[in-house]
Amino acid sequence: MKERRTDETTEAGAALAERLARDAYAFVAAREMRALLAAAGPLDDWERFAQSWDDMPVDTYMADGGRYRRRRHAVFAAAAGGAIERRPHQPHYQSLDYNPLHGGIERWFEPVRDEIAAGASLATILGFCRALFERLAPAIRAWHIETHQFRIEARPGIAGKPTPEGMHRDGVDYVLVLLIRRQNIGRGTTAIHDVERRPLGSFTLTDPFDAALVHDARVYHGVTPVEPVDPALAAYRDVLVVTFRRA
Image (cartoon, rainbow, N blue to C red; front, side, top):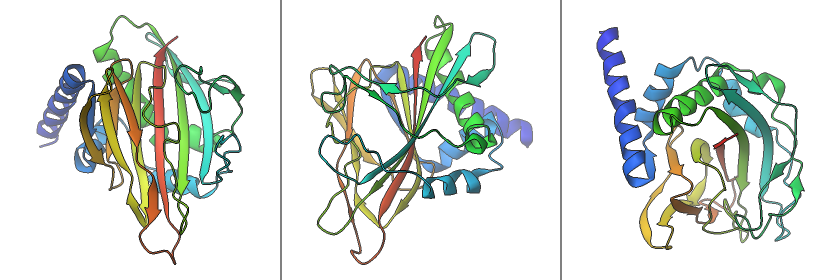
């Protein structure tokens, strides 16, 4: 039975790579994504991993003056045949071509906590991404990897904006957006457009482990603002964003 599950997961991984190669994006439902990650490695510390979103500082670089986004950041590197290793803390930078709202400056975010960066869940997620993206781009011999913990908060009359820059590309090769938790949130629909800005599809990450994958050079992506379902209760959307680009 274990061998059969392994074969099924391998086939699912190959099918996902084919989808991403063909369409330049893929929505992966929670059940499938969790199985793919479990096949890639342990998720023993998932509860602690998810709870780490409860302890994040406000993103003070918001050009719209908003205080609805919380964030932590970490950088990793991987060379062919080598391990994925965390790099010294450094700023996140995007050019104005890719982020006209927040680009053109070095943004220093608080680092992902050491115990989370070194934990099983993040290692499994990064290992899964590496295997998938190397299947798609075998010529790339070294990767620059960035991870972003995002919490988008919504309050009555104040929508939270997961992508305040609108439809965009990130200036990398591949992107994973993994839903960690969604609490009392409405809306938050992800839209995918081609490079001519024509819509290709849309979906909403609603359950933990729901995921979106994009080939960044071939599509734009964006997420509609989120709002509280019950204005009397806390409302937030937690995601992990992982980007891979050739080093």
